[in-house]
Picture 1 (cartoon, rainbow, N blue to C red):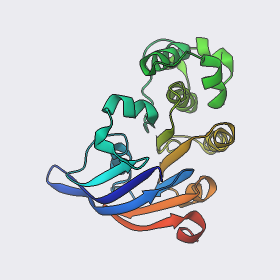
Picture 2 (picture 1 turned 60 degrees about the vertical axis):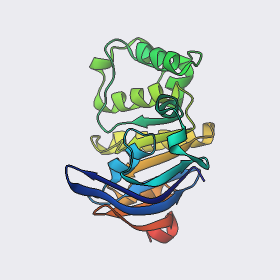
Picture 3 (picture 1 turned 180 degrees about the vertical axis):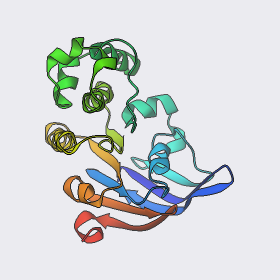
Picture 4 (picture 1 turned 45 degrees about the horizontal axis):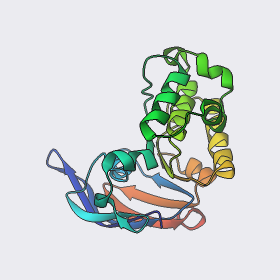
Length: 218
């Protein structure tokens, strides 16, 4: 298993966000689905220690998450947020900086290719990209760190249908190209069926069901 959660609870501002969540996340693509306010994004942030639970335990690769250095963990378990947050400069600058932080040799063309972008994007200003292009550039920046797991928070929520389909095709191809696990937050069960092998279904901070996509989302 990539992750195992045992009785995970988290509150924020006096409100319970996750309640007694116990589940496993296997290798492959796992979709986390549920309505707004279900705790999906919060669960995602727990997986690379951008937040820690108030109670409960999380293992990553059968080792307690708390034993990992948070910065090293975030390079191995890379989060691509819902809203693009590229640094000033070119797309190539963003990718090279991410690789440098992770101690990886810079390979901008590989990262762009895996994210479905042509090498010409390396010289383009990040601030002048479309939203769909920014999402791909964020993906390329994360991939430059050679992560084992990608955490994707609603990666297509701000995109039109054509851009959404292109991102989904990129993620499918990415799984074919490299050995990587993906944990994808989505409000759309249809997207989870298209992309996921495994599904976690949350409602009001509680895990309602988890298992293979064909069983949970029939």
